[in-house]
Length: 330
Image (cartoon, rainbow, N blue to C red; front, side):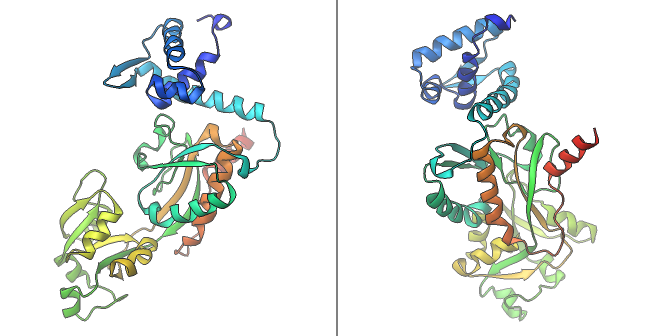
């Protein structure tokens, strides 16, 4: 392709189409009319010799080629925006950016109320969309899924993603207050549940894929033990609400268990076998590292979450530190 003859303004339209999946919404995104965006799409198709999008109902689905363009275009446009913005001080009160944050509903309880209070005070024009799109196994797809910040629970961060560890969280077993079997066994709030009793009771697990086996079952299998999982649910709220209204047990991050125990009349207990604590990160796309608004928001998130650490263990190095060490050695 002859770059000298290519209108680079078309890249902003393509970026908006990849984000919005609609010519109407893309038009609003870039401040053009819908016919102007449609015309720009026609020019892009000719210049790039690819249909770029196919219509599926009211939506536009990107072709494989267009999907491959998403991350490099976003990276270059973001870098250009940062360069043109200059190095002046960032004022959150003047920021009107929008961000998409991906995380489980753990953060609906543990982060969003405090974060929205913080934004209302310091950055009232910033808008957030909270979505549950990114699982640890597909963190590398953040850029393609138009997620600005992910909050994964994982021990492995892909090399193309930058991440900062926030805190460790131990696990706890939760049961409803006045659970008949626990009461008959004389087990109250905070008491340990013998592993024989634990394995003999029915359980509900959190699984976004509907699986009836989880990390707990892997740990039990190493001890030659098993349990009966009667139900799997796709959110933590479903997990603790089910426990509150049934005789099922569940395992929750201890930070969340303590936060919801009083409201949902739950008791919390140590897990009766060894379990590696959860490690929570704030993660982002590499090209967003130096964006002032993005940097400010992710630092606010990390600062609001760090106090939740309840495991006496050093946090691992951030991937940012690791990447800096690699660059210094080159």
